[in-house]
Length: 402
Ligand SMILES: Cc1ncc(COP(=O)(O)O)c(C=O)c1O
Image 1 (cartoon, rainbow, N blue to C red):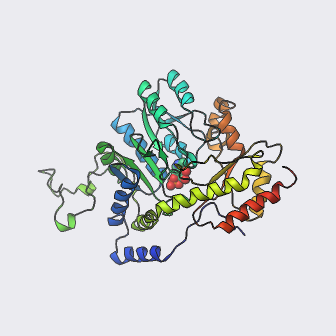
Image 2 (image 1 turned 60 degrees about the horizontal axis):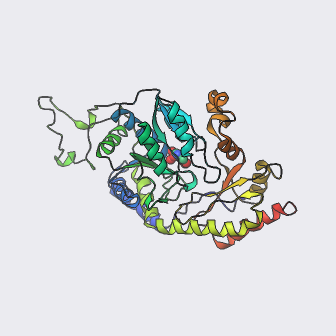
Image 3 (image 1 turned 30 degrees about the vertical axis):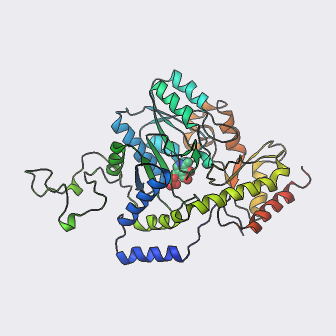
C-alpha cells in the first residue's frame, strides 16, 4: 500500500460546497467560476491577463499558435527548448507544426542552460522561439534568456506548468516572457484535476488565446450577455442577416474550454496557496536535513525560499552504487511512490526516436538526469510522521552502502 504519494488531493467541505454551488447555478461549461479563477490567477502571478484552458498542454498549444499567428512564424520554424521536461512541452511544439531544438540543462536545477541556448541561436537561422521549462519549480535564468532572445531576435514563452509562484528576481515566473503556461493537473501546487492557463501582459495575445481556445470564434465577452439582449457584436456585420458572433469564426481554432467544476476546485486551492507553498518548502528543508547523511549517494534538491516545489527531486550520483530501478523499487515496496524525472526526450523517449542519432551524447546532463533522476512527494498533506517515515526508509535502504 502506498503511504506517501507523489501528490495528493483531499476533498473537504469547502470543495463539496463549491461543487454543489456550481450544480445549483446549473451551468457546467465555462462561466463565472472560470472568469473568477482567471482574475485571481493573473493577480497571483502578477500579469494583466489570464485565460483558462482545459489543460497545461492546451495552454502550450494555444500559446504557440498565438505566437505563430501574431508574429508570422512559419510552419517548421524552430523552438529552442529543454530536453528534460514532461513530454507535453515537446508534443505541443510538434503538434503546432514547429520543430524542437534541444539545449542541455543544468545538472543541479534541471533547467535549460543559457550558454547552450546561445550556442544554438548563433548558428540556427530558423529559430523563432525560446521555450524554457521551469522544471520542479526551479527558475530558468530568464534574465540571460531574454538577453539572448533580444540579441538573436527570438520570442520567449515560459512553460511554468510546474512553477506556481516561484520568485525569480523579485517577480514571479510567468511574468518574464510574452506569455506563460501553467498546468493545474493533480499533484501541482494548485490543482483542479485537469486545467491549464495562459498568462500575459499583452492584450493582443490575450484576445487571440481566447479566440484560439474557442474554435477561433469572434466572441470575446467575459460572459455571454446575448440572452439579455446585450451582445455588443450583434450588429457588427451590417447587412448580414441573422449574424451570430458565436458561430462566426475568423481564424482556425480548437476547443480548449474548461468546466466550471475545475475552476471552482482551483479557486478553493488558490485561497490556500500561500500555505501550500510554505508547507512544501518546509517539507523539502526537513527532508534535506534528514537525508543529508546520504548526500554522497544522492544529489539532494537545491533549497531556496523563492522556489515553489512541485515535488522532491533526487539524482543518484553513482548508478554503480545503487541503480534507479532498484532504489525506486525498494521505495515503492516500502510505500513511497516515485516518478522518473521524465527522461531526455530526444534520446530516451521512443516517440522522438527519429532525433536520437542527432542528439546522442550531446545532452550529457539531460541524459544523466533522465536516466538517474526521480522524485517523490513533498506535498502539503504530508505530516511530520510521514517525513520521518520517508527518512527512516532511506536509512533502511542505504544501510551498509554509506
Ligand atoms: C512541464 C510541463 N509542461 C506541460 C504539462 C502539461 O500539463 P497538463 O498535464 O495539464 O496537460 C505538464 C504537466 O504536468 C508539465 O509538467
